Image (cartoon, rainbow, N blue to C red; front, side, top):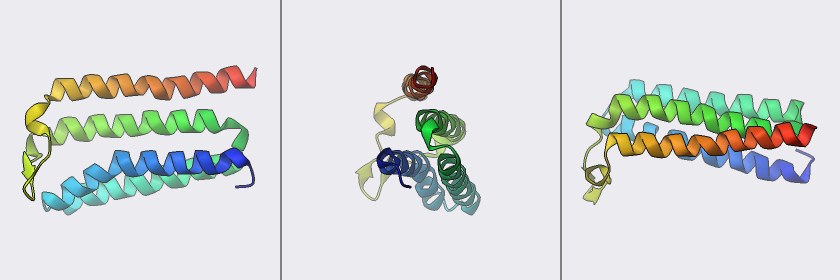
Length: 130
């Protein structure tokens, strides 16, 4: 990555992917479900590979790539969260997971609000290319 903004885009994509997929992998391990952990890992690696490859091809479209990655991660999180919410333990290793303090509908609303950030990056890219 030769462009100065490349490091920011790179670490932004890596951080968003680790944060967005990491909890699913951990939940798969906690639930002793290799399928959940494997699918989440495959989605995370694929997301990173495709996003970074797209960035290498077209670094001037960094905003569009970041926005698309965020929206993709939001979709993945919505699917896994809604499928696995009931299996998330209230405590893990003596630490509260926070599940008892927030409902599924509240989490869905928050994720919906986060999607605005992804759309914002896409709009920035459209404005930037004009």
